[in-house]
Length: 299
Image (tube, rainbow, N blue to C red; front, side):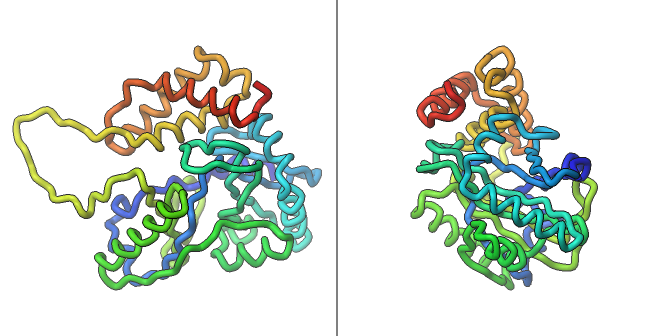
């Protein structure tokens, strides 16, 4: 099962505007809008000895401080119970959850009173797909395992209605101090990504990204292209990913951490077509301060 876990990478999720072939692919579909929590994306599975193994997108196996944080979560036993229950029914689950460590969250949008987790997806190896929200919720409910909250369900017949629903969800995120929302559909149109098939369309919308669909477009010739800045939340998120995927003793060493942070932020800038920030080092040292304040890692 560990080999299956190493092969799985959670799909990269873009904004509605980046969906292929266009945002209109969502029209007529039932969209489930989930709150986007601010933590570390971690996934869990059982190995051949019924031991929980953890992975992140940046590692084949999670680092020791991710294991340490997971093991103090009040929900860790429920994760194991659900994985064992699936195995008893001749299935293997990979459970995806947001690991929220005590203190200030990675993008500084939330403050967590204690280390805990919330499940946001379950992959069934037997079915070769993600479960819809209802099935995921039912499975987690039976072992008292928390799942991310659904803020609404929508079906839009025109694009303006879709923008209106999206803005309503972001207004709630602003009111409740959350980073944004994740939208999901489950249907018959398969999307092949990262070597496995998922019949879902996923997207995310965050408070710190511009509402390009509402911005008039004007074209200017003969000038140097000035790209928008990478949102601060995205910078902090890339720094957190490096922290997540390095051992603490390595992250504390700028000569190891900074090149990886610079590379990660550079790649995110290319992906979002944004300009590179000049003060990357400041975000690195802010993360070190947050670790001290949160009391994570024994610094």
